[in-house]
Image (cartoon, rainbow, N blue to C red; front, side):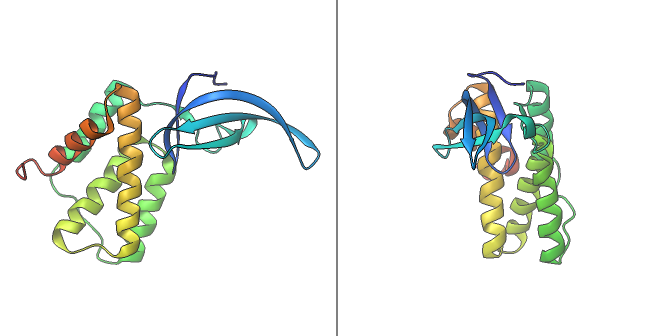
Length: 162
């Protein structure tokens, strides 16, 4: 169980902080919820404590995990499926895992694909979402600004573009 003040990661939302834990009655049923604030999007959500683990709520990645994520971003271009439907499903599955390395892989795949051929509107949205989720976790975990992390990621993706 997490405590108020703890920083956590929630798939598809990114990194946030548990503001409090409250019991609320909804439709006549009392449930205990984590109230989580996400600084990057300035949103707050409620997640049932009992379902937290099942839906992927976890502690922020360690410095070692973030270093592995950076290695994924630095790697040579990846092999990318030409069929956008297959690519989209693979990327969605990677994002659902909630692992920072998988999120970095989605960013790498879509960045690489965009360098080869412009992304569709759907893939652009997916790229932006994955990119923001990655930034949110790294900035909160390493106590860096969003701009610092964004610059660092872009430099890893395109080291010769500076």
